[in-house]
Image (cartoon, rainbow, N blue to C red; front, side, top):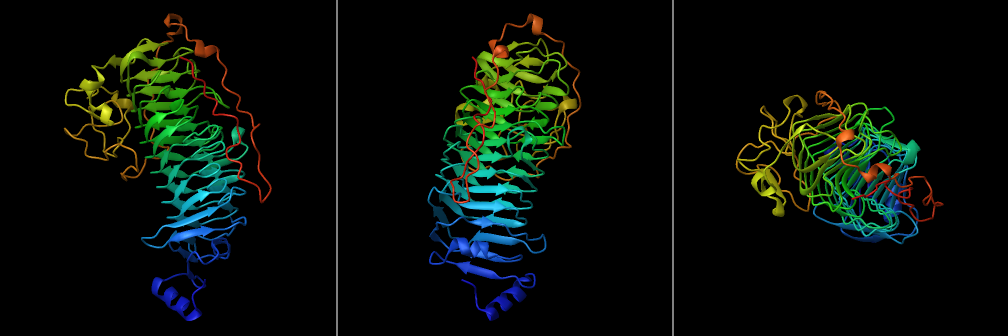
Amino acid sequence: MRRPILALVLVILALGLPAGAAVIEITPSDNFETACESLGPGDELIVHGGTYSFSGRLSLTQAATEDSPIVIRAADGETPVITRDALQNIINIEGASWITIRGLELTGGGDGIKIADSSYCTLYDNHIHHVGGVGINFKPGTSHHFVVEHNQIHHTAGTGEGMYIGCNDSACIVHSSQFIYNWVHHTAGDQGDGIELKQGSWGNTIAHNVVHDTNYPCIIIYGTDGNDRNVVTGNFLIRCGDSGIQAAAEALVSNNIVLDSPANGINSHDHQCSTVNLEVVHNTVIDASPCMRLTDWGGRTGMVLANNAIYCPGGTAIRFASGSGSVGIAGNVILGSVEGATSGWIDGSSIAADFTDHAAMNVWPTAASTVLGAAANAQAVAVDFNGTARTSPHDVGAYHRTGDTNPGWTPGEGFKDEVVPVPDADETPEAVEPAPDAAADAPADTSADVPPADVSDDGPHDPPDEGQGDGGEDSGCGCVIVQ
């Protein structure tokens, strides 16, 4: 309910709010849907603790401004739970701008939050779980300049992605947005990727997220159609279904830690685009099968594999299914076999000798680790997984060792602590001298003969206004597991 006019005037004067702005407080006895849809530019809706249930279609369509944004937030120290039946998404944001949603718990419904044709919005510190579809779903239309930060998403359904960003074949796109410091886990449903960034979406940063226990890849990205590249950096990924990271094209993949994926650690192949202009540098990948499956890399433009710690003892560390001609390979440290290349790495000692305690997810380099000072300096990125500045001689993998103990966040299940600002798409390692094509000398890899799964738009489509959220639109991530 709205506060009396005199009280609103006093609040506006005290807080310096824009003229006409209101601070509105509601409790579970009020109608959450009506309160949200009634907000105007500059309004702040404070949602007190308790459970809010509604049956209508909640759609935020307001065009607020940078000077007069709309804020919907939990009351300090309280947890409002927003729920509804499965006939519709919990919150729809459509054609809106400059809206912040902060501190809400969303459960039930179709998608948790579905976004279309919106811009300059922030989703911060929300808890989205046990929904009937995708956690946060960006489609249709073009959305841009979103900040999706410090949200926990788990126990999804339908297609089941934690975040679904864009559409197949560039049918809708998201650009110039940040997906940072989120905790995504136990995604379910038919697919259940952790964070999926679709073809044609560009200039986005996926950084410092913790993603684990997914059905499909923890992070999957496609290409940008020649626009500004995407950046995937500083993420902690464990027990990922299919792949820790699947990356097709036009991206920097750096400073990520991928542990204990039952299939691929990092996987890359043509997927709605040709695999080009992809730099995979300073990642730590331990125990996958294989650690890196790099199909369709041979003879492609702008492909770099440098300064990675790739440890799959007794298995395959790197598999170039189509050879590695024109690929820049330098400064890697590996355990395991390599197929399709002949140089660009040295052998590590052992997981136990080179990392502090892999079983406890502590892959801080030991004092005698093979990764120390072994990187190709020209391909070093500026900071490491912790945001610590890298200095020469550069260390291989996600960390730059500065002492006996890790000075940063202790990896585990939960939110990653905040570090320095994330790098942008302009942080580009220098080119590596391409490796010779070793395909002729490499063992045969049957994965080269297996086409990617169908990624046509044959899945569910948008429902009518009162229909259930449709989740992701495709029939799979296009991943193929071949041992």
